[in-house]
Image 1: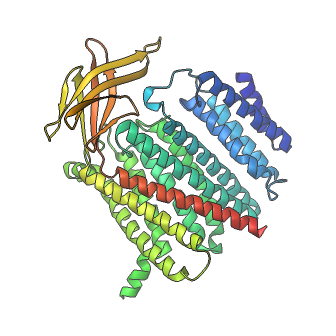
Image 2 (image 1 turned 120 degrees about the vertical axis):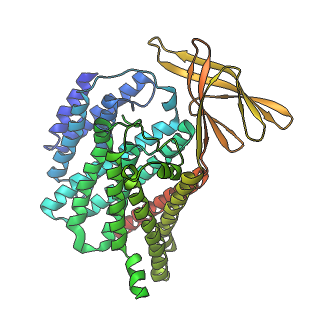
Image 3 (image 1 turned 180 degrees about the horizontal axis):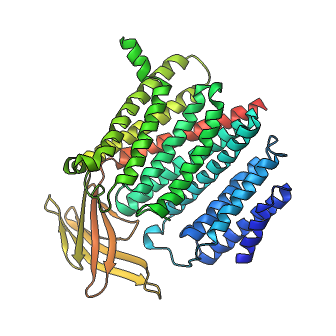
Amino acid sequence: MKWLLLTSIALSMFGGFRRPILLAGIAGELIYLALRGIDLGRLPLIGPHDTLVFFSASIALMALPFLFQPTLKDNDMFRWGTGFMVALFALFSLIFPVFNMPLPPILNTLWFELHVALAFFAYALFGLGAILGCIFLSRGQKQILDLQYKAALVGYSFFSASMVSGGIWGYYAWGTYWLWTPKELWTSILWIFYSFYLHLRLKGSGSERTVAWGGVLGFIITLFTYLGVSILMKSSHSF
Amino acid sequence: MFAVIYQRFASLTFGLWLMGSVMLCMAAGSFVQGEGSAINDLPLFAWLREVPFKESWWLWLTLGALGLLVLNTILCSIESLRQKWQRGSFVIRIAPQVMHLGFLLIVVAHLQSAIWSNKQTMPLQEGSKISFSDGHRLQLVNIQASYDKRGMPVAMSAGLRYPVGSSVQDTTISPNHPLFYQGIGIYLKDVALEPSPAALIEIHEEPGAGLALVGALLFTLANLVLLGKHSTAQRGQK
């Protein structure tokens, strides 16, 4: 199945040329993920390979409504940015081995799947928000900033729901809805950061560039929360 | 003078600074938190009393900033409701304040757990009993586990027998399926079948859990309402 992932990476990478090429790449990756899920008999959400592909596919999936927005329909920078981001994380997943292990009993619950899937949808929208922030900073179109806000707001809603389902899972799995681990601290930092971002917009039109930069910084924090904490810090709550 | 202080404490700018401060303190905590810290084994305030300041400074600062953020959130909500009460849709006016309320309830829930939570871990042999302070005893009746061909556990469970009134009841606990008995959660953490069947049982009291759930649900509900209203407003503009 690796050939399917490699093909979709190539198509996504060059999706900036034409939207149908990007859409073909996105479709290929979603098919790869679906086949992997069928193979495992569950959502592929464990281990760096599966989570990176899931993250990449989430970016692709969340980008679909944006690709058909009148403001972005002919925006090659958004297509290139999205295609590159989708391809980058899928490519990164190839570094890691593919595990076909059974789900450990503690993870065998709908709350876990809901928690992780919603978090990745949120991360994906934060990533798209960063691309939109870069486009606004280079081209200064006000509608782009509105789209960044929309991506952040929907992402924030997904992320809040992910934290709620994570708390419920934690309560049933470990007896507590909260642990003071680096992963949970950074998850809270990310949530507070997007609360900060959404409030920052209330400051008015004078802070547009700051808001756009906020969307970019938010994605850097997202990546640290997802990858940085797992790689650099010891936490019971990684990958 | 009082009006100036009130305005400062109720301002959006102050709220943004406080959010920034909470983030910085937590980020510092994630780096300085020592390996093997007992922070998750004790109620938070008990841990804060026990450890030296050089280990817990980031948490004291986080709590200080969070306390001010709670005050700022309350004052901001009051001001927002006071200023916008006559303007716009009721749902748009109230939804952000319900989100604020949800956040405040979650903070109160954490405070409850920080003071009154309790956790005990105990390895138990099959057939042994756990005694509660009211004299009731709960028996670990049997232990089961299944492994895949590589020796990885795929399922585990433990049968428990506990008194209900004058009779006894049997139940099975497994990961993600604890028993809640007299407000206490009884969790199966691990099992071993050799040399003799034994289980690692954890007992948790989490007094803030209910309030945290109420706060989280209020927050999520108001968030979804706001999102729906935002989409409707945008469609209307088109």
